Image (tube, rainbow, N blue to C red; front, side, top):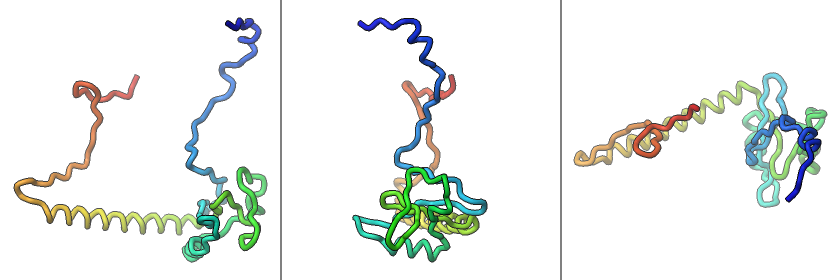
Length: 155
């Protein structure tokens, strides 16, 4: 059994630093300049450069972010070489920037596509229904704990 002196207990701060959990699958991006948003885009697939992915993003209005643009904010990333000379890369992804209006238009477009597909699936499902087994579209959920009691997340 190890005996700790009171000096050890006094010198170790219990309130030192706060640990903050971060999603290991999510890569942080530096703060983008006013009017722009940063996004990591795949440029290599299976060890080979994937020019189709980058070309597609360039057509959508994305621009490659260079190490010179980031300055001292260059953490966990390094400048690439070859065709993407000076680009900020990390493993198989490259940092790109896009103007905020283009980003918003892209979000709206894909939301509309999602809504149309959702409506089509719902319509197909309802049209194949049998009157003997009616389909109820109840889009709500609840959490119950134990004997049918609702979960309380308050202390």
